[in-house]
Structures are given as structure tokens and as C-alpha cells.
Image (cartoon, rainbow over all chains, first blue to last red; front, side, top):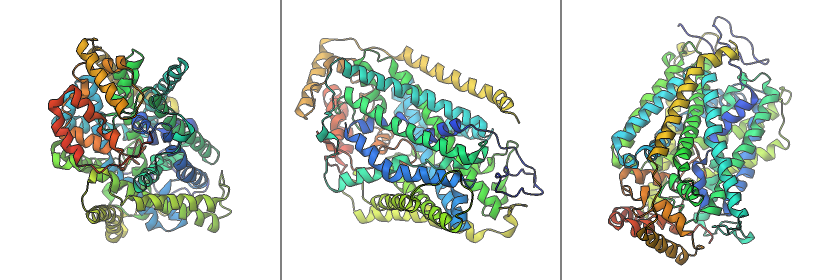
Length: 484
Length: 145
């Protein structure tokens, strides 16, 4: 098979014989930090959370303590000791099939995510060009197709191409407009204007209404999903052991700032009755900029949001598919066709196959109203599937510390067991709360909802990966794939 | 392969991306039309401000409402009940995630009905379709006011 192998995995690895190597493109720790931030945070969520006023700080900080911190610290330790990302950590800590399950779940859930992300981008482009287009299915389908396949093409050009685009996308699409929002918000307060949302101590906690509030708080744990995803590129760092933890800590700080400060700034300026949950993200930005008589900034902010969304998409296209490829080549979990690499050393066939499935789903979303109206339910199923990754990752981290205590690590998490148990319990709580029907389900049967979400979780997160493992053939293993 | 060579290989991808985004921003700014302040726009803004006060919020700046919504409600009144627009806001009644962690929650009753108030004042003919979709939701009071 005319293919090239993945880069050798660093000092703890044995170089693989009989396969040509593609040199790992060098990334700086700063670039990796920006890529990680671009995968997790953008201003898209700011208007949604601005509705909660000062309580949005609570709604982001509590999940940061119980989910972001464990995820970031544990990934920092694991990536500073083992290359390859989550598949490798779970493979080493638990078993290879579970390693495959982990990276499969990380990969598979993105397939359903791209259509909704790109539909948002299409509606934002429509806002800039002609708002009437946002309701047009053909327009939405075309935009999704063009952007998605351009993303696949860019990703197939190599890690360096997407690293540059995603980190600049974050800077232009999130950091710059986020700073503008926060500065304008502070100017608003400095002018002596009262905050539109009450900023008293009694508003620090969200309203407690029982189950609805619990759903809101626990589901917010997932705001930080994806912090570990870019660890798959760790071998591109010059000194992964030292640089990856540094990049993770910077990303953690940036993610917190991006989530909290712009949401607060919007809540200062725009009354919650104008940051409608239904009128769209751009409506809130328009109200914000209009206060300062710079409404013309709104389309510019829209373009910035578009660049941030596409930057995030690029990181998600490249990360999980690379992890899936690596374990599949080592263990023969995927057919040889999917294991082929292009001349840039990229898993092009996995990306293209994923693209075909995504295309079908996206066309259904854009053109069949019955599909788009229930599409929200897929975001529950996919986040449920993603939580399997975290449940496995935290257990693997504890096992690795116990079973391989002397394995060199660039960073060790203090009180690792406590940190992992906290993260595992937070993930399990989010998994359980995922079965509570949200607003969109209306007053329909809870049993039906549980069956639908549970069925989706079973099919996507268990049956499909099980089928790959069950029907794999020894010949699917790549030569030299047992080097690890 | 040196970083320099990578940079030069991909330079034209970066340049194309920048050109496209800048072009889109220019089109957006050209298309953006600032709303003229008229008596009708002010009347409608006052009605919306009164509704906000009645809902327990501080009175919003009516000039800002005029500039945002004008007389016709702007983009808010652009086919609000369509399948794709409804699909998007249903996805956005969610937690605070910006990417793959986004999942639906039990939304706040008033926050979800805020747009209906805008439609009622600015484009009442488009309220029914939207209202039907809102009525299907199961909401709660999750925002402290």
C-alpha cells in the first residue's frame, strides 16, 4: 500500500520500520493554546448567557471547577507523558478496544455537529448579505456544502495550514471582538449608566426552580467540552512534556475570559428582553452596537463570528480523525481504505468519508423541515456520546498513575485521584441529566425522550464501534503498526 | 520541512481567506442601513420599552431600540416562523457552550417570549406562526430578575 506513516511519537516511542515517515510539522505551544481555545470558546454563546446577567459568572465558574479544571489538568499530565491524545491514554490505561471507543466517540459526534454549526454560519452570512436568505433551504444547503468541503480541503493540506487558520480565526473572530465588547461595556458603566441586568450580590446565583435550574447548571459543564481534543497534535511541539501543560493553562484562562467577560458586557448594555433567546445572536450584537451609535459594526462582528466558527470547525475536522487514524493503523480497527494518508500525511479518506455522511445529514437538515425542526435532539445525543470519552479518560488517568508511576511525565496533577473523581462525577451527572427533556420537547412523553436519546447513544456510541471491532480483519493492520 | 516553507506554501490559503472575509465585511457595511428616527419608530420603541418595564426590567433606552428595530423590526421580522430559523433558535436554547458541548436546556419563559413581544409590536402579521412554535415549548423561570 502506497501510504506514509504518522510521525514517530517522541522519545518514549520505538521508531517504526518499513514505513516512510512524514515529519511532524512544528507547532509552538502558543499556537496549540490558540487552537485549543478555538475548539472550545467563541462569542456565539455570549448573548445566550447574557440573559442570565451576573449569574452567568456562576454558571461558568462552577463547571470550570468541576469539569474544566479536571479535564485540562488531566489532559496536561497525560499529553505530557504520552503522545497521540485520548485514544493513546485510554489504550494504555484501560485497553486498546476502549481506546478505539474513546476516539470513535470523539470523532462520531462531530458528524452531527457540523450541520448545525454551519447552518449558524449560513444564517450569519445571510444576515450580512440578505437576511431573507436565512429561511432558504437551498441557500443553506449550498453554504454548508461549500464551507464544509473547503474545510476538508484545507485540513487535508496538513496540520500547519489549519493551525494558522484556526489560531488567526480565534484572534480575529473572538479575541478582537471580545475585547471590543468588554471595553465598550466598561465605557457604558463608566459613563454612569446603570447596568441593564442587576449586578447585586443577590443576583450572583441563578434562579433556583428545581429541575430546570439543575439542568441548566449541569449541562453547562459541557461548555468546556473539547479541551483535550488537540492533544492529538502534541507530537508537533518541540518539547511536549513542558510545552503542552503551558499551552493547556493558557487555553484554560482564555476560554474562561472569552466565555464570561463578553457575556457580562452584553448584559450590562442590552436588556434581557432584547437579547431574546430566539431572535438570534446577531440581534443582541446589533442592540449592543446600536447603543453606541456604531450599528455598522454589527456586520463586521458577524464576519468575525463567522471566522471564529470556521476556525473551530477546522480544529474539529483535524483532531478526532487523526486520533481515529492512529489507533486504527496500530490495531487494524478500520479498513485499509480509511487508513490511507495523502502526501501531506493527512487522513484524507477518513475526512472524505466523514464528509459524505455529513453531506447527507446536512442536506436533510437544510431541505427537509421535519429534520431541521427536531435537529436539536441530535445535540443531546452527540454530547451524551462525547461524555463517554471523559468517563474513560478520567479512569484511564488514575490507572496510568497507578500502573505506570515511573513513566516520564512533564507535569503531574496534584491529588490526581480527587481531580479525576470530580471530573468523572461531573461527566456522569451530565450524562444522567442529558435524559431530562428540555424545552424543545414540550409536554411529550418523558419515556419517549429517554428511549430516543438512549437509543442514539447506544447506536452511535456502542453498536457502531463494536461492529468495527467485531468485523475487523488481521490484514487491516498496517505494517509496523505494533511499534507501540 | 521548515516552518518557513510551510508558511509560504499556505500563504495563498491565508490570503484567500482574508480577502473573502474582508469582502464580506465590506458588503455587510454597505448593505447596513441605519434606521431613520421617525415618530412611528419612536412610538413602537416606547411600546417595547413599556413592555420591558412591565416584565420587570429597567426601562431600556428607546433611541437604541429605534436604531435597532426601526419601524419594521429589521431582521427579527424576517420570516421568524420559518423552519430553518426555528431550527436555529431551538438549537440555541441551550447551555453556554459555543461548540460541540452545545445541548438544549429548559429555557426561561420570559426570555423565550421576548421576541414574540417584538413581533407583536413590529410585525403582528408574523406572530401567529412563531407563537405556535413557542407554545410547543416547556419552559420555566430560570432567570433571576
